[in-house]
Length: 325
Ligand code: PEP
Ligand code: MG
Image 1 (tube, rainbow, N blue to C red):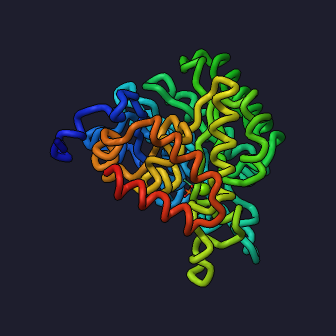
Image 2: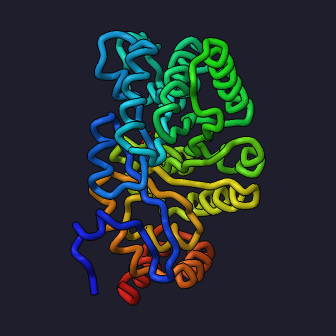
């Protein structure tokens, strides 16, 4: 019998065959971290730090950032907090940064590209993140990584920030994990190479879809093409999960596909390790996972990977839902 949804908030997510699944929340502030815990989150799989910057009139300094990250970490009471470095640009503006106007902002100067070009910004943020790691289980991830070189450069800035803080006698978590968002197809294709160096992946389907099928995520005229059930997207996701597991690493998902109940049996079958979604979706997702068997979902994923259109994928998932749930 189905439990009430409130009852699920207090319980871990467990599948019908007894596997524990990590369900985390996407947050944009320390206050949302607290709300996420109340709604049953195992942690925060994506802290979108840009809201901290967008709500300010000038660039928040290290202290202000540190306070926000440390408070979020404390509110999670030891549960993991994945802090994403600034993802400005694309659709997100920041007047005081005076970014260039671009014809194709989603293909332009955004996220880690800004952080690597203006390394003082990235260094300040990473110092704040590293300091916050003393107050919980903090992990850091870099957005919009397209190749190994960017990851290595970002990681070098992190290593420098850690060395500085060590010299200053500041205590922090020396074993803090560092990973990348997989939201550009080139990174998904190269997952095997990345997996040797990163601690984890988090798949950002919101951007991964737009870059895979070349359909702007904001453009209604091409919205019919923008679909995370496109088989090409699914093959990329499968590649990332398999590459991470082959190297003993883990893969999460923080794009909106992770919160879609229709996608859940497929993602479970593909072996996704961590799911991060809007906190309101957590209890319904736990109720759904409790009805899913991993063996059946693996077989479903195999069938789906052989399909050739998003429409066929949706039909298969709808048939599975009608038969099993
Ligand atoms: C994504 O691209 O899927 C993602 C989670 O990041 P954002 O939506 O903030 O670009
Ligand atoms: Mg993104």
